[in-house]
Length: 460
Image (cartoon, rainbow, N blue to C red; front, side, top):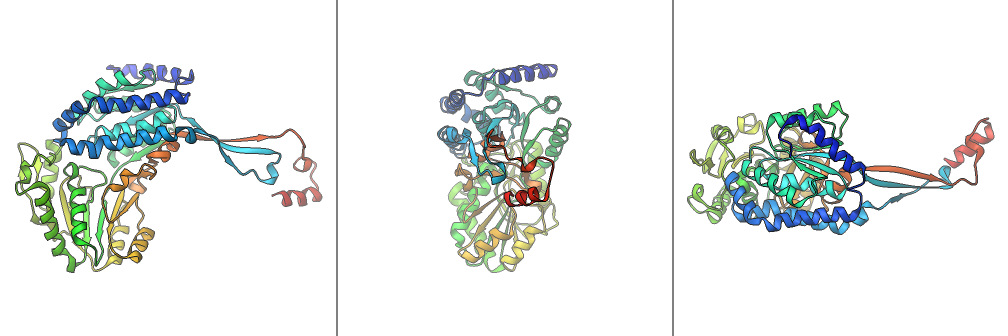
């Protein structure tokens, strides 16, 4: 692992030499690397738990739910389907191309840069690595320096398990990331905020490098009239409080009718007691805020409405109680950017159409949630709300389906991954056509004539 930023170009040259030499091409090598990644997670479960507890106060169950279980599933899925993903994909050749055959041939890009995020510092760094390896790429991994304990641990473990000729880890902060972005990568994969996403795109433009950006946003949750309030409250509370709300797909705000609002608030209060007891700031099942800067940012948002549940803070330990607020103005501070914390604004709408209009007036979210018993409402919401991912009658759980592509749209990101979508995203899908030498069809060659024109129209 280079510590001097001047060594980055040498590191890239070494990785590219190994790639060009064919190291990553064999499917056997790819499967071995994926299996080694699985062993890293399995054999170091305790150390990963300790690092994530130090960085974010995560209990072991949340490490499993939000970090490693998803990775194990992705690895197993990729290993099972690797042979079919890498096969030629035949496409129809029209009459004008006969005699001939056409197909799409997936091939690796080369050297991929993966920049991880601090909120799920294991999953969001290694999840893109799975399709990168499956597709036959080399990779440079940049873990988040904000989750310092996890970054140190991954920098130690990855070289012990994965082939250093193909995978390197670079630790550091802004200076190191800036220097990395000056290098010529073949693809850049970034998870984080829109401000840094713009920096990534500007840097990538210098080399015309394709990018995948997973950026988050304000994910709405709509409670339709007549929805199962108890079930909605339980699943909404879990989705919001997991990792203390520091989840890019967490429900960011709720839209509910006035007649259902108080019932929903009561149900959320009940679920919070069932999950975390009466003293939630001291619950061992509840995470902390990553650092003081984010703690202060979130505490300032508590003045955006009337707090009806929670609102207490523990400044010394960077903890904020799960908080629900009402009487929130659409232009208030808490509604201007992704909350990324355990604060849940509840806004009132008269009906589903008003909720849909409210969402459509804002940037397209990474995720959207609808709780309903109505098939008509479900269909209308799915057709009219543009969102990266949609989950009906639950929160977050679409992440458990390996075949569902995950990614944003508009301001919430670009590019999708997970399963085959990830393999295709980190592959170049090369178009190939093979022509037969005989018979030759002279109709396309000069000199042209009306007869040839009629034949060309017929062939086309």
